[in-house]
Image 1: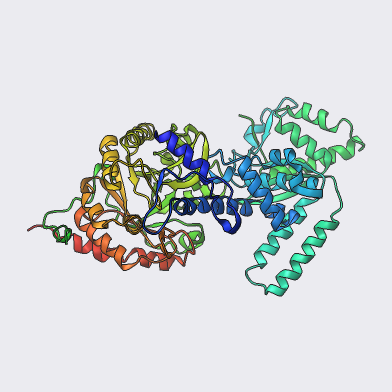
Image 2: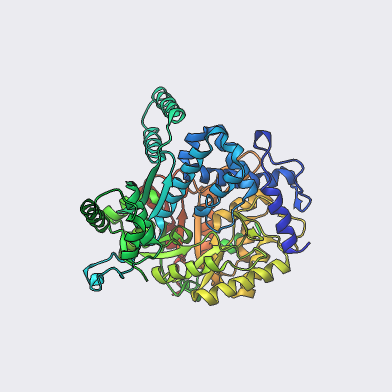
Length: 283
Length: 296
């Protein structure tokens, strides 16, 4: 057997979903693995197969705690196993493991039950969180960059900023999930159960709410900032490379606000973006 | 008893630095781990060097790189990778290599290590260190990829022997013969993990001293020591315990053969305080001192 053939056989065997008791599928091909005096070939494969599944499931648990809260632990585990079976890791880094989860869930909506929209929103938020954490930061736009200040000026958003439009206020929920998780180490089991129950009830009752969110980074921490719809559209237009003048035209032309009010708002937005270092020069 | 002679102290001058570790004499290092960031940056402990997991810093920005830059201001860093997969039949991942090269430039690592294993096939990644079949074909493929990586990264490379839990019918040689075949063909260094040798020797019933005695001392760029977990039928390389005495004995043997080589303690799970990890790593000092016997 060639090296490639052996590696294909072993990889296909170890990524098979574990069966009851977290055992490797007894039908997995193992004829290429030697048994020894203590372990059968299948048992030796099982060491690797368990390690594979535990490592990847742990990674998804860590990256998508909000989705786990939305679906509940059992449904989340079913979804995670199905996702990893359909979309095994295609990246050298586990950081990218959840990059195709939104696309996959849209094709497999049954895994979210009656909470599909909420689940999709949470996935988008949590993936944006991952990207905001370690994407690049460009030099913040300074006075020297504004020498050519005018409607033709093109500016860019920091690469770590993600703008997402959501149907549910999943930002609040994610913050609560984080807080609950941080308390887990200190609170008693009874307190944890009571709080978890409260969270589940809150998710069940969560009303839809159209929100516009910037997921961004400040001092190496990820934050969620709600935006006005017009502010969101202007940022998106700037992020898409439109010159400042055209971006303002495109995003504010339907604004119901009077011009003076609009000018005041735009000034406030630019001041806040500058303070947070969101704007950089388009390279 | 076969290894009794090999255990005798060497009486000639040791050569601690070699071309596979950039001719450095780094001594004892500690793995840089997230739970220790604050302690290291605030207390600034005296550490000869830190080993980083390259992949944790192969990102475009954010906290990981900011912390790394602060560490680099005060400490020497050596890169240790987990995703190069020299033993995978498929070509090296160009995106991985490009990011790795950027990190090499940032850290100025004098040498770079990754594992003698495979972990990906047809573009799908296991994120594990899977065992090699010890065949001549595999040795050729692996050595070619080590050479390609070194040529692109422009830094000496050393390959680490992994712990393993499975053996293949296809194998044509022992693990140590395979290691020698690869490093000879690639003309690369060895990151000798004595804990991995111990773990594999128990899992596959071989004498770890046979393994150690076959390792070419002049190629050993670095040594790893670590703890592991014992199960009923096998031992798992978990890096979550102190180093056990039999592994220290293997280390003693290795360091006498190889000379006082850059040594790192790996502790990756259930990580205790920095001081505890640091103290455990420095237990290696007495073995290094004993190995530094120089002929009159």
